Image 1 (cartoon, one colour):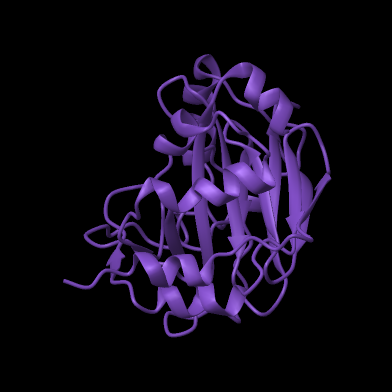
Image 2: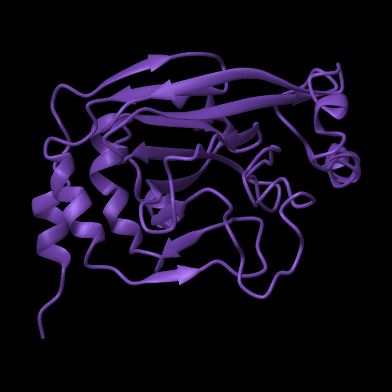
Length: 240
């Protein structure tokens, strides 16, 4: 029985010229990630896609991929030799976002569901009190942009604050969006642009959102490759 393991290895060689630039204490950019990025695009064409369903994530996703796909990334970009535990925590996947994203079996109007529909409001990615980072590769032949936000002046969010954020964002719709954002409570404090074959990696506690413009449609979505990694406090400080 044939597998696609060798195709991934053929696709995903890390560029020896990959360089990391720190932006803030919660987000950095890796440039020239893959030596042959168009091969990574070819690889994702082999995969099936799911409609997202009853999660905060809009659009479509690939099937979750094996953790070992992140091995060369961790060892060569982050220079982590003792990395098996970090690698085993990873569930790589391709994400496909587009204008007016839908979620299967959800009937919330787009003018009310601003975190998912067109991603106009931020969220954080942390789960179960773990410290983690998200490594997000741009596989579009154009620049993409990710926004970072603060709630009551704090970008990194902790468990005791999440209920307050949820209550506030639920109260926002298209009619009061400009009144209830960038007002000293919920503020877009940083927008990071990154090109094809560049990646941002950020603290999963950071409030953030993808900017989705009219260029992206269901037939031509925004394609990103996502690697989540659980880290210790020491590893988190060293990576970011």
